Amino acid sequence: MTAPKALDTPYDQPRIFGSAYRTATIGILLVITLIAFEGMSVGVVMPVISQQLDALDLYGLSFSAFLIASLFANVVSGLWSDRRGYTMPFLLGVVLFVVGMGLAGAASTKVLFLAARGVQGLGAGCTIVAVYVMIARVYPADVRPKVFAGLSAAWVVPAMVGPAVAGFVADTWGWRWVFFGIIPLVVPALVMLVPALNKPAHEPDASHASGDAGPADLPDLPGSSGSSGSSGAGGGSVEGARSRPFAMTVAATAAAGGAGVLLYGVDKLHISPVPSAVAVLVGLVCLGYGLAKLLPPGALRFSRGLPTTIMMRGLFSAAFFGVNSFIPLALQQVKSFGPTAAGIALTTGALGWSTGSYLQSRRSVEPHRRIRTGAACVMAGVLLGLLSVLPGVTGWVAVPAWIVAGFGMGIGMTTVSVTALKQSPVNEQGANSAALSVTDMLGSALAVGLGGALINVIGHSPGMIARGFVVICCLMSAVSLGATLLASRTRSD
Image (cartoon, rainbow, N blue to C red; front, side, top):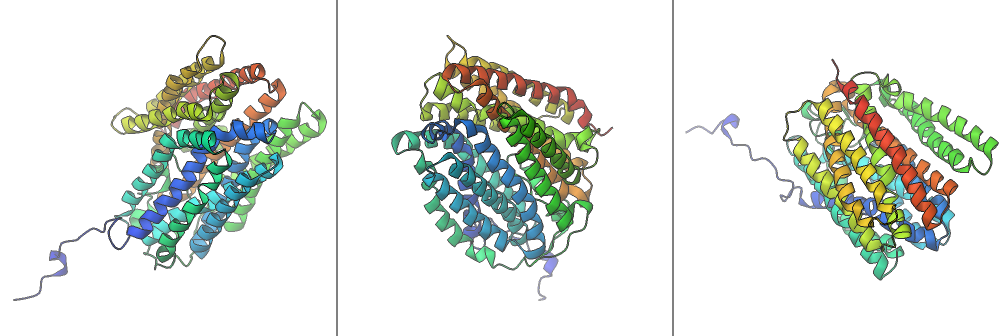
């Protein structure tokens, strides 16, 4: 009798919750869940924080600071992970995230809280990208899709329950415990991930290089920067125009710094017009320079095909999150909702998003038509949500409105991500995943920052906040209308 040949031996695919990967999988999912919970919850308690810290004038910037810092950290952490391994970016990211949470919970002034949000953003950006690279290094190629599916679930659950839970915590124990309560949960996640941080790397292969389970498949998660084609955990080299460390770091700094200066100038235009106008101009120049390096050629001109597809991600994010961030403020200040009730209104958006994301995968409609439908639904939801602050109209109108808007995001954002991946050459899929992340974060940051500036100009009384919310909804509906009209340009032919 002869020994069976290797080809005759059945292949037993590893399981992500099997003995070899169980602790790493649980640790990764717990880390992402905690980051997602913070991201989905802070909007609910921001109106309370703004009142207690006298920080309504920094309401929009509190969101934008997190997003801009995350944008910078995404690019730098991705490059760092590619060349030196994911261990240090991951540990630094977790430390910064925890420190930011502690600083936010302990903040006694609005300036300290704003700084804490920036630290949180740096930590979240570093951690998420490092986790992507960790998955590519630790898990075999045929197992990675299951891990990324788990990451999607790790974002969906906080999106559905996070706002309501955060509202309950704020009502019961105070808003500071929304931040403090997350910190102890980081410890078991780190303990579980210690073996993964020291685990030998799997060699990159064709399925990874082609982006089969890459960040672009996860529309709710920031994309990895330059991770395609990386080598092992100890580092390696990456080729490509958008993967040069110094140039990309300069571009990320210019984009993030330019966005921050731009928003600062816009926010202060009504107080000191001339210096603020100079700041706006400087910010635009820096932002334009950074984006020209971070995005594919032609993106800023909405050239047909991939460039417009990537820009659509920013338009969707701006239209949706530019309103989403102000719904709790409007409901609590204008309609006297408590944090818990306002949280429930936000949760419905996640329900619509999940439904839209699922349904788009079951349809055979052309991608540009799905993108157009998604943008139209976001526009309809935003315009319907506008009614929630009008006199004589119940604030609960925000619930069906945000189901419709979330449904449009589920259809549109998922289709944009998948389409961008299909339109990308193999050796550019990692860079284009990062570009999706850049437009996503910048779209949200600029829209929310602009909304905060409008609230400051119009006023902070309940009636003026209602008026500001109506103006924000009109502007963001115009953005979604633009996305609807531009959808046909996502076709490559």
